[in-house]
Amino acid sequence: MAAKIYRDDEVIIIAGKDKGKLSKIKKVLPNGKAIVEGINLVKKHQKPVPSINQPGGILEKEAAIDLSNLAIFNAETGKADRVGFKIINGKKVRFFKSNGKSIK
Image (cartoon, rainbow, N blue to C red; front, side):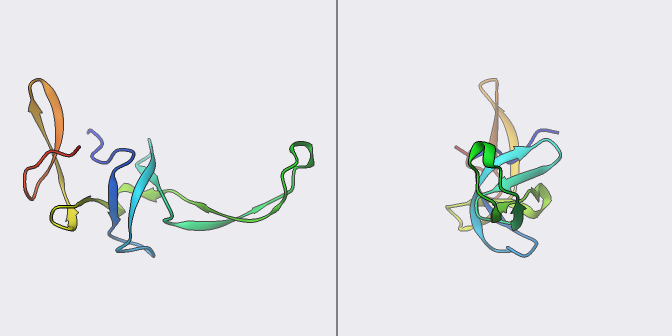
């Protein structure tokens, strides 16, 4: 099945601790997860690495979130939306299911 959410898409979180937040996809992973800007932040305890002059400490970084917990955001309606595919001039194009407009 083709991926319905791509990098740089505006998404809304529909489940989890960050439910309702709006953000942008940084990276889509092949295991059905994505890295989203500022969402699902976890604390990583980093040891210092003197050879590359990297300090240690507790860092906050974005963890992967399942694609089933994300929905593409339709700016026209201001709500989460579903994605469909149609063929236009021999090209596969994504569109919003609510109003039929193509995405980007």
